Length: 309
Image (cartoon, rainbow, N blue to C red):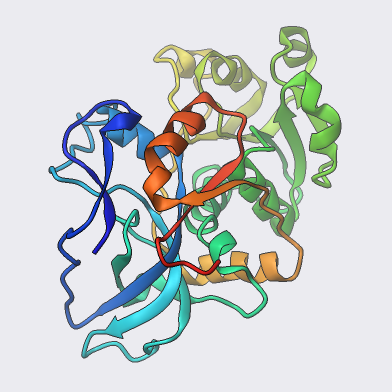
């Protein structure tokens, strides 16, 4: 099969589009997906660069990618709910490839009316944003939660989940994005690049942070005693000392096929909108990594070589 392969840590140029890559092996519980698309996530370039090799070392040659949408090519002997020809999507691994093998428990059917390529943007960001709010930050109905990076993909998913729970949502964005943030249907917006605005900001029950760094460290002081500060990115080591009573757990997205399907249904129904920045061929993964790392480009989709999407 054709796939994007990484043979060593390094810059985007280390990603090579290759023919004759061995197809993934199947087991009794495997759903083999002929990929339509994958998406590019920050975790991909962090793994590629070696930034995360201490905790998440790669075995080379490696194939990156966490999201996949496509059509079922074959299923293992124990698979009951999927068959060849089904349109599906999943959170998986090694998705920068024509064929992706996924455990059947991690696969869900793609609802009619959802563009198959767009669907590839859903799994990782939806599970990260949802679990950040529901499990890590543990937001409840009626509570006030600040979600930073609210206009990013994970931030949008977090806002969507918090609103469905019934929380009062405040979007944390850059000052120039305040008007755009209010279009998310939130109760208010905070300029998180304005130190004075942060200092004057009221205390909240929880913060769901997708930004990290010094901004996050400043915001921890705005959580009520005993509240929660859930985060996705890196925090300075000194952050916890700024508000010792606050719980500060980090989210790690776990597969949840039913939740992925729920988000896909909401995309179909127009309840959740995920802007797509670029749709490019899988062979251009190196170029897209370089652009993605610079930021400000939106969600990037990588279309499989024979995709009709």
